[in-house]
Length: 355
Image: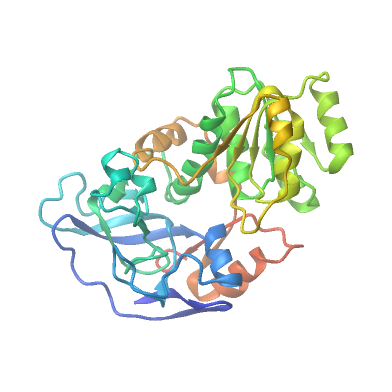
């Protein structure tokens, strides 16, 4: 079958690989329909291996090369024994996290913090950028007719964004700042609007992404940085500051801008992944009595409610998708364009079966 395979930095190949075979007990064989390229995939491409395993993974036993793709919709092809929640022909969205169920965090019900967590498309035998994949039954969630295959492929990043926004705990009608309008930032802005923010302010200095953010139609977009950005926020909030800020850029400047922008006793949620140390002034956190939250992924049980929110029309996740590609062109037209600082792509989907 055709698959997109990661070998190392700047080395992703589209090639023929062995099919995974039939599903074992509790497993589901699926045909991926559409799969998003994630920021994690891009980090692997430019700077990896980071989370793709160079030694046998303690839970799955796999090593690179790795079939990529962990944001995907699929059709059920075959089910293993004891599988009851889906049947062949069902359309599903895949929750990619794989957990042991035995460690202290799993026993606490915090499966996304599993001590040896793996992920389909990053540290498992299968990935969504292929013609077939094997996943566990707990990883598949049926999607209703009101949700398209394209929307279902965006459930994973939508869950990341929603988890970060919910951790901010802002009041209904509150003001929320979203720093960065990449895929997660754009989804966070849509999520904040869906959860009842009275005003959503997006900060994005990149002109292409700022224009994209404006098209989301959720609130004002600020392209200023530094003091000019803070002055703009003060003007928009009547000098009060925002109730919550969601940092989605993974940049030191964006994190500190969020701290400056929130009102006293506001909250700052770190959703963007920082891959380098960041300088900040914790004294400011104390003087403003702030809540600083870090987030990692999402609860593994979030899929049904994210899907319901999408089906209701309140969370239009397909707005972030800028291109759909066949896998044979996904490196040049997907990965390379997404890492271009001057590029205009936001979320690219690929498919080995649909395009």
